[in-house]
Image 1 (tube, one colour):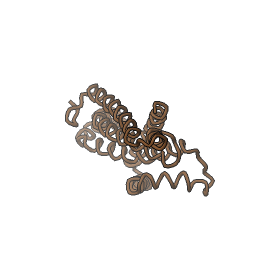
Image 2 (cartoon, helix red, strand yellow):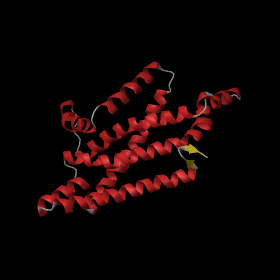
Image 3 (cartoon, one colour):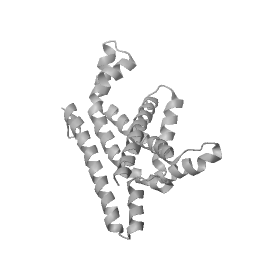
Image 4 (tube, one colour):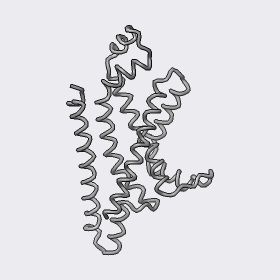
Length: 208
Protein backbone atom coordinates (compact mmCIF):
# COMPACT_ATOMS: atom_id res chain seq x y z
CA UNK A 1 0.00 0.00 0.00
CA UNK A 2 2.93 2.32 0.70
CA UNK A 3 4.26 1.69 -2.82
CA UNK A 4 0.80 2.34 -4.23
CA UNK A 5 0.61 5.58 -2.23
CA UNK A 6 3.93 6.66 -3.73
CA UNK A 7 2.54 5.96 -7.20
CA UNK A 8 -0.45 8.16 -6.34
CA UNK A 9 1.88 10.95 -5.16
CA UNK A 10 3.92 10.77 -8.38
CA UNK A 11 0.80 10.86 -10.53
CA UNK A 12 -0.58 13.78 -8.53
CA UNK A 13 2.65 15.81 -8.66
CA UNK A 14 3.27 15.38 -12.40
CA UNK A 15 -0.37 16.07 -13.20
CA UNK A 16 -0.56 19.20 -11.05
CA UNK A 17 2.55 20.67 -12.69
CA UNK A 18 1.16 19.97 -16.15
CA UNK A 19 -2.21 21.36 -15.09
CA UNK A 20 -0.65 24.62 -13.91
CA UNK A 21 1.14 25.02 -17.24
CA UNK A 22 -2.06 24.33 -19.19
CA UNK A 23 -4.02 26.72 -16.96
CA UNK A 24 -1.48 29.51 -17.45
CA UNK A 25 -1.64 29.11 -21.24
CA UNK A 26 -5.45 29.05 -21.23
CA UNK A 27 -5.63 32.11 -18.99
CA UNK A 28 -3.23 33.99 -21.23
CA UNK A 29 -5.24 32.96 -24.29
CA UNK A 30 -8.47 34.02 -22.58
CA UNK A 31 -7.17 37.56 -22.13
CA UNK A 32 -5.52 37.71 -25.55
CA UNK A 33 -6.46 40.35 -28.08
CA UNK A 34 -6.84 37.55 -30.63
CA UNK A 35 -10.43 36.42 -31.03
CA UNK A 36 -9.12 33.07 -32.29
CA UNK A 37 -7.15 32.43 -29.07
CA UNK A 38 -10.03 33.54 -26.88
CA UNK A 39 -12.38 31.26 -28.78
CA UNK A 40 -9.96 28.34 -28.48
CA UNK A 41 -9.74 28.83 -24.71
CA UNK A 42 -13.52 28.92 -24.34
CA UNK A 43 -14.08 25.83 -26.47
CA UNK A 44 -11.31 23.87 -24.76
CA UNK A 45 -12.58 24.68 -21.29
CA UNK A 46 -16.15 23.84 -22.28
CA UNK A 47 -15.13 20.44 -23.63
CA UNK A 48 -12.94 19.52 -20.66
CA UNK A 49 -15.50 20.63 -18.08
CA UNK A 50 -18.48 19.26 -20.01
CA UNK A 51 -17.34 15.67 -20.48
CA UNK A 52 -16.57 13.04 -17.80
CA UNK A 53 -12.92 12.69 -16.85
CA UNK A 54 -13.15 8.89 -17.12
CA UNK A 55 -14.40 9.17 -20.71
CA UNK A 56 -11.50 11.51 -21.55
CA UNK A 57 -9.09 8.99 -20.05
CA UNK A 58 -10.55 6.12 -22.08
CA UNK A 59 -10.49 8.18 -25.29
CA UNK A 60 -6.80 8.98 -24.83
CA UNK A 61 -5.66 5.55 -23.65
CA UNK A 62 -7.84 3.23 -25.72
CA UNK A 63 -8.58 5.52 -28.65
CA UNK A 64 -5.11 7.01 -28.99
CA UNK A 65 -3.60 4.01 -30.84
CA UNK A 66 -6.12 4.53 -33.66
CA UNK A 67 -4.46 7.90 -34.23
CA UNK A 68 -0.95 6.55 -33.83
CA UNK A 69 -0.66 7.69 -30.21
CA UNK A 70 0.24 4.74 -28.02
CA UNK A 71 0.87 5.69 -24.39
CA UNK A 72 1.53 3.62 -21.32
CA UNK A 73 -1.12 3.83 -18.61
CA UNK A 74 0.81 6.16 -16.29
CA UNK A 75 1.68 8.64 -19.05
CA UNK A 76 -1.88 8.60 -20.39
CA UNK A 77 -3.20 9.30 -16.91
CA UNK A 78 -0.81 12.20 -16.35
CA UNK A 79 -1.57 13.82 -19.69
CA UNK A 80 -5.33 13.37 -19.44
CA UNK A 81 -5.60 14.60 -15.87
CA UNK A 82 -3.25 17.50 -16.54
CA UNK A 83 -5.25 18.68 -19.55
CA UNK A 84 -8.47 18.31 -17.55
CA UNK A 85 -7.47 19.99 -14.29
CA UNK A 86 -5.78 22.76 -16.25
CA UNK A 87 -9.18 23.82 -17.57
CA UNK A 88 -10.61 24.05 -14.05
CA UNK A 89 -7.62 25.91 -12.64
CA UNK A 90 -7.73 28.40 -15.51
CA UNK A 91 -11.30 29.32 -14.60
CA UNK A 92 -10.14 30.11 -11.07
CA UNK A 93 -7.19 32.12 -12.38
CA UNK A 94 -9.43 34.14 -14.68
CA UNK A 95 -11.89 34.83 -11.87
CA UNK A 96 -9.10 35.96 -9.54
CA UNK A 97 -7.70 38.34 -12.15
CA UNK A 98 -11.13 39.79 -12.91
CA UNK A 99 -11.69 40.28 -9.17
CA UNK A 100 -8.94 42.90 -9.09
CA UNK A 101 -10.43 46.37 -9.38
CA UNK A 102 -10.33 47.74 -12.95
CA UNK A 103 -9.05 50.96 -11.42
CA UNK A 104 -5.73 49.21 -10.80
CA UNK A 105 -5.30 48.64 -14.52
CA UNK A 106 -6.32 52.19 -15.36
CA UNK A 107 -3.88 53.62 -12.82
CA UNK A 108 -1.02 51.49 -14.08
CA UNK A 109 -1.65 52.41 -17.69
CA UNK A 110 -1.88 56.07 -16.73
CA UNK A 111 1.60 55.77 -15.22
CA UNK A 112 2.92 54.51 -18.53
CA UNK A 113 3.06 50.77 -17.89
CA UNK A 114 2.37 48.49 -20.83
CA UNK A 115 -0.26 45.77 -20.91
CA UNK A 116 2.15 42.99 -19.96
CA UNK A 117 3.84 45.09 -17.26
CA UNK A 118 0.50 46.00 -15.75
CA UNK A 119 -0.46 42.37 -15.52
CA UNK A 120 2.91 41.33 -14.08
CA UNK A 121 3.50 44.09 -11.53
CA UNK A 122 -0.01 45.15 -10.52
CA UNK A 123 -2.72 42.61 -11.32
CA UNK A 124 -1.07 39.24 -10.67
CA UNK A 125 0.41 40.16 -7.25
CA UNK A 126 -3.07 41.14 -6.05
CA UNK A 127 -4.75 38.15 -7.67
CA UNK A 128 -2.15 35.64 -6.40
CA UNK A 129 -3.84 34.87 -3.04
CA UNK A 130 -7.16 34.11 -4.74
CA UNK A 131 -5.41 32.04 -7.40
CA UNK A 132 -3.66 30.09 -4.67
CA UNK A 133 -6.92 29.23 -2.96
CA UNK A 134 -8.44 28.07 -6.26
CA UNK A 135 -5.39 25.93 -7.02
CA UNK A 136 -5.62 24.40 -3.54
CA UNK A 137 -9.23 23.37 -3.99
CA UNK A 138 -8.54 21.87 -7.40
CA UNK A 139 -5.43 20.10 -6.10
CA UNK A 140 -7.52 18.20 -3.54
CA UNK A 141 -10.04 17.27 -6.24
CA UNK A 142 -7.18 16.11 -8.46
CA UNK A 143 -5.66 13.97 -5.71
CA UNK A 144 -8.90 12.06 -5.24
CA UNK A 145 -9.49 11.82 -8.99
CA UNK A 146 -6.23 9.91 -9.46
CA UNK A 147 -8.17 6.83 -8.35
CA UNK A 148 -9.64 6.70 -11.88
CA UNK A 149 -6.34 5.51 -13.38
CA UNK A 150 -6.99 2.16 -11.75
CA UNK A 151 -9.46 1.64 -14.60
CA UNK A 152 -6.59 1.45 -17.10
CA UNK A 153 -4.25 -0.68 -14.99
CA UNK A 154 -2.15 1.75 -12.95
CA UNK A 155 -1.57 0.22 -9.52
CA UNK A 156 -2.18 3.21 -7.26
CA UNK A 157 -4.03 3.24 -3.94
CA UNK A 158 -7.46 2.26 -5.21
CA UNK A 159 -6.13 -0.55 -7.41
CA UNK A 160 -3.93 -1.84 -4.59
CA UNK A 161 -6.90 -1.79 -2.21
CA UNK A 162 -8.98 -3.77 -4.68
CA UNK A 163 -6.22 -6.35 -5.12
CA UNK A 164 -5.87 -6.82 -1.37
CA UNK A 165 -9.63 -7.09 -1.06
CA UNK A 166 -9.76 -9.79 -3.74
CA UNK A 167 -6.88 -11.70 -2.17
CA UNK A 168 -8.08 -11.55 1.45
CA UNK A 169 -11.86 -11.41 0.96
CA UNK A 170 -11.87 -8.48 3.38
CA UNK A 171 -12.89 -5.51 1.23
CA UNK A 172 -13.83 -3.31 4.18
CA UNK A 173 -10.40 -3.55 5.77
CA UNK A 174 -8.41 -3.37 2.52
CA UNK A 175 -10.28 -0.41 1.03
CA UNK A 176 -10.46 1.19 4.46
CA UNK A 177 -6.65 1.27 4.58
CA UNK A 178 -6.62 2.87 1.13
CA UNK A 179 -9.08 5.49 2.37
CA UNK A 180 -6.79 6.27 5.32
CA UNK A 181 -3.88 6.82 2.93
CA UNK A 182 -6.03 9.16 0.81
CA UNK A 183 -7.07 11.04 3.92
CA UNK A 184 -3.45 11.47 5.00
CA UNK A 185 -2.39 12.70 1.56
CA UNK A 186 -5.33 15.10 1.42
CA UNK A 187 -4.38 16.44 4.83
CA UNK A 188 -0.82 17.05 3.61
CA UNK A 189 -2.05 18.91 0.52
CA UNK A 190 -4.53 21.08 2.41
CA UNK A 191 -1.92 21.74 5.09
CA UNK A 192 0.59 22.87 2.49
CA UNK A 193 -1.95 25.16 0.86
CA UNK A 194 -2.85 26.60 4.27
CA UNK A 195 0.82 27.41 4.92
CA UNK A 196 1.08 29.19 1.58
CA UNK A 197 -2.14 31.09 2.26
CA UNK A 198 -0.75 32.34 5.56
CA UNK A 199 2.42 33.31 3.74
CA UNK A 200 0.40 35.44 1.35
CA UNK A 201 -1.92 36.71 4.07
CA UNK A 202 -5.10 35.20 2.67
CA UNK A 203 -8.15 35.69 4.88
CA UNK A 204 -11.67 34.70 3.86
CA UNK A 205 -10.61 34.56 0.24
CA UNK A 206 -9.17 38.08 0.23
CA UNK A 207 -5.60 39.32 0.51
CA UNK A 208 -4.90 41.20 3.75
